[in-house]
Length: 327
Image (cartoon, rainbow, N blue to C red):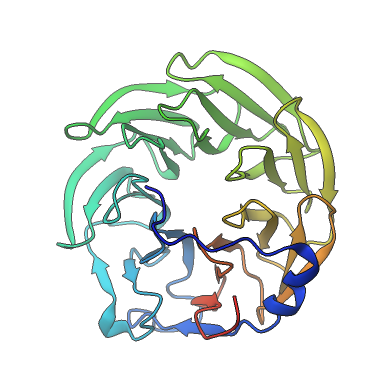
């Protein structure tokens, strides 16, 4: 779903000055009774950026309007009985999303009606979920390394469970429509590139010295960012699968990573430290810094603006840019 009003990319030499003008907006979840009772574990923007979903350890799945931070303007989606580990929007629809939980299910939701449209058992505690770019399928993964393919057209139907012999932390599709590849992070420090829908192993890259935790494919598909438990983000060129640079300024394991809408900048999240650093992809230069006031393990760029949503233990949801600024 292309953004009808895309922003113009900003060159690196102008970015730092403009980025420094952005202000943070905080969003308070009324179901949180203290700094650690309802920690946000996942953040996802809707395809056009009109909404942002948060899933928490307190079983709360909430849809926020980034322009209206008051909780009365948000919508709570109720149904999970365990912590919500990851949420993903249907790339072809602005109001449909899927979530996986430690309750062992993947739920599909209509954000407009706030209703659950389908519940699919996934064989264990949910860990990751990814939606195909054409909206035709969802892949889920569990903490016991069971992947499940769920076809979504016309209605969600689960296929056979697919057991992994190596710890699998996150999975994502490539950007082509229909998709042709799956990319997976592994506990042995590697990533696997599989054919889709064949699921054949096409290539494996030993990317880190310890577990690969998260990954993100740039919007241009030129680079794959891989975050590891070794506190490093590696940037791989997808044309030859060579590591072009490593980002080593993070403190603690990299829990999430993402690219700006134009693919020019990257940011990673960690549960340790007190700030986020925005890095220019082609040069490796730090061009922006966000003071978070604590560890921010969950980060997500807006799909059409240079806004960054982030969350961490006791932080709640915060969005850099929603509070004002020149970007």
